Length: 180
Image (tube, rainbow, N blue to C red; front, side, top):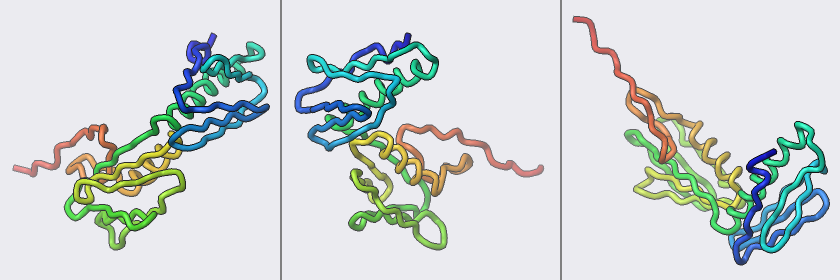
């Protein structure tokens, strides 16, 4: 039994869930999301809850049971509350600025990095160009864009320079002490 798959997804006020064969779409105040699903699972909406059941007890069906329940839960949460990731830029001369839908970052390289903000995401630069806040309804898209930005200049362990998540802790190393 999938413990996650057995729990129903509660639908908050103002969110609509529509199930068609092979597709689930969720619409709310923050946007509209849809997800395809395979025929090993059945999805139905009853009394302001979404129930995910599986047709058989194959190993693959058990795995999809919990997966699709969690995907639907993230979709419902995304269109009602939204998701947010914060990145901190640390280093002398490192900064970011937003021009339209372009994120321009100076990270100590010979030229600046320019990233195009994907549709469905909102990016804000705070704290004098030292903090990037990414918000959106699609959890996967928010996380993917945040990881792409972080991978441009990952934090290094000696001085801590680079781009890190706000809640990430960097384990610092001690540098050379010199020969006496």
